[in-house]
Image (cartoon, rainbow, N blue to C red; front, side):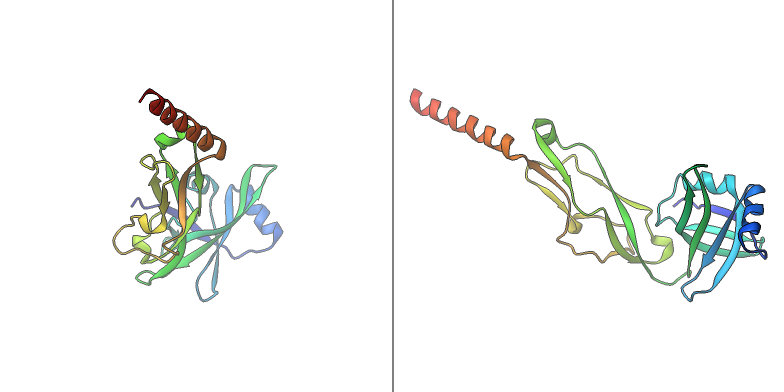
Length: 205
């Protein structure tokens, strides 16, 4: 798994004026929270954050080095976005404990195109994320599922998901992730065509 690292500085000045000064220096004000509710105010180079932000999900582990001495493994927990400037202007990180099992949700991404969809079927999506339990170092960024092998009226369920060793899925195994179905009109047309072919075959006989 690729390591993603941000270098940060601790912040001692707070309030709107301090945050504005931070952003003027092209740095992003942020806070790291831990499971006990403790917080550490930091700022990071905006350019570094923006570059990383484009490539991560909510389950991507990031290492933040604060003042060159303290390392935190974190997720991006929340962020505030300015639609006018098209920039994130504040971020919250959640720190995990190394060696401690965590529970979190991972996004599901579907890839591929079922053959049945080229014959009139429709690919329907089910759940879009699953809850997992694992050590931080084993956490996948996302789960990619290839649906190209799904046939008509077939489904892909949570129980069909393959995850790395050390990762346990907690979501209900019977929930559907993707389904390939024919619409009623297409199904009716197919049934009518099949019935016509059968009738023609009987007439010839």
